[in-house]
Every structure is written in C-alpha cells, then in structure tokens.
Image (cartoon, rainbow, N blue to C red):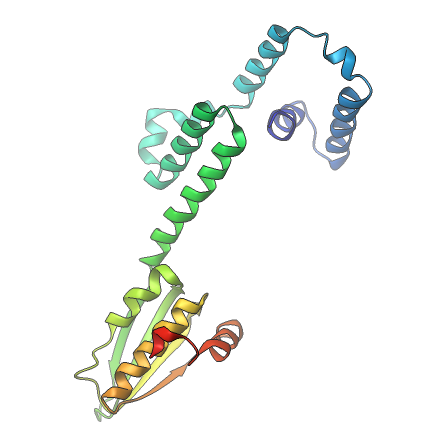
Length: 215
C-alpha cells in the first residue's frame, strides 16, 4: 500500500510528471529492499510510523470529508468510502478495504443502472402491430423487470421489440427475451426482435432457445 499509494502521491506532489519519475521511484525502492535491507531494518519503528503519518496527512483529500461536500455527494459514493475505510481500519489491511470497496461499488452501480431501463410502446394506426422500444443496459439486475413491461393479453397479432437503444450484456437478458416470446407465442402472437447491435446479436444468437428460463 505504501509503495503504490503513498510513494506515488508524494512523487507527484513533489513535481513528478513523467514515467521516468515512476521508474526511478520503483528502482530506489527496490534498492532499499534488496541491497540496503539490513540498513533499513536499523531505522526505529517510531521514525517509520512518523513518516507514514506524514504521508497519510499529505495524501489525504481533506476536502472530500467536509460536511458540505458529503451532503452534495451521492450516497452511493459515500457508502463506498465509509465501507473501505471501516474495513481497512478494522482489519489493518488495505487490500481487504479496497476489495470490499470494489464489491460495494459494483453492487451499488448495478442497482443504479438497473433502474435506467425504459420501455415505451407505439400502436400502429391500423391496430395490427405494436412496437416496443427498449432503451438502457440489459443485464441480470434490469432484465428481470423487462418481462413485466409488456401487455401480453391486449397486444395485437404482431409485436416488434426494438433494441436499437439497448445493449444485451448477459445470458439473463437472453432468457428474459425467450420468456417474452414464449408468453406471446402461447397467445398466438408473432414477435420480431430488431435493432440489436453486433455484440448483442451475437450473444442472442448463441444463447437464444438454449436457456431453461425461456421455456
């Protein structure tokens, strides 16, 4: 942690701007550990603690914990920061803190993105077909609600699902699309899925019809 964060921050704050500075800092640290390890071991621990405290004070962004800043920050980011600090202090291990922070950030991000999916529909004037336009990122957290966004009982004989403004990220979404087409097929309604980009189309063609959730 000291080599990655503390030394890098102090290096930058000292005026470093190129990759050469990073290389020289790494070489100097390597010399201290390998060649001068016995000499470094003679340094009193209290002196090293004082150095680390000064590094922590110098690298910490004190502006980020001001009450006025915390009130404006999204609650998800504050939660990630607090969980990372709490785990690091509780375990005395920066790696654990970073790991927990990354996991919390992933969960909160997935929860936030899952609610950005929108489904709008347009009925043709002749009433023979209906177009559903899906926009957003479709993955396991958002595709579950996709199944409940269609009016299976009252839709006409032809339904078009336009995914030109959406992206399919995982097998859960393909299974949801299979479930949608199965529900419509049970009512004798034809479904056409259009507008998929290359990545989504490839994933859909590979998995469609082979997932138990679609039957």
